[in-house]
Length: 183
Image 1: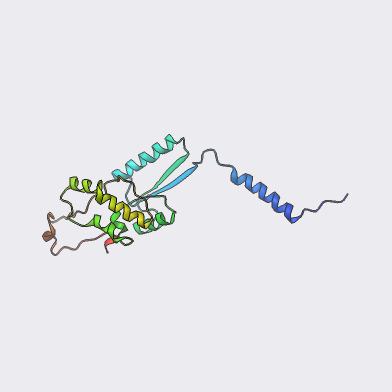
Image 2: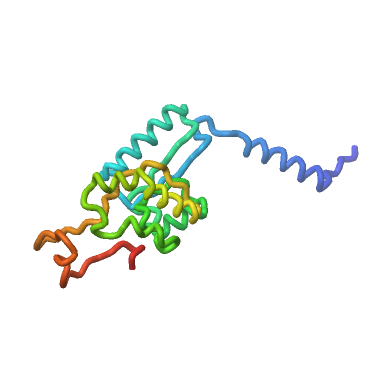
């Protein structure tokens, strides 16, 4: 009895068929959509605690179809690295102060100007109005979509252990650290 030889074409087709069957099988407990959410803040930060609550609620409400995993404390790298990851699509969500985008679009740096707002009422009126729209538009020019409402990252303020800082004159002789975007 003569054996039939397996042609290269049949071998490739058979291998492809078996591979397709294993690739197309979706694990029953895996999310259909898995997003990574990066931040330099710790889970103890109120914004991150609420983000985790939101991620849990989204997973519950979508019956596990969408899962958002938080990567906090800069475990994916510093802010500069996470900005690059968000722009490349390696990171789907990123919580950052918009002024860190200043090296890519100088307009974004306006939000970080010290003493620009006398109090939080003025900050939120600006961020929820035309000023915030302008900043979100500047971020979109870079390639990032910003939600219309965001978490409070704090507006620029300075604290010291030696004396209160109430205005620019109180900073004479002080050395201060600035975020990477401003260096």
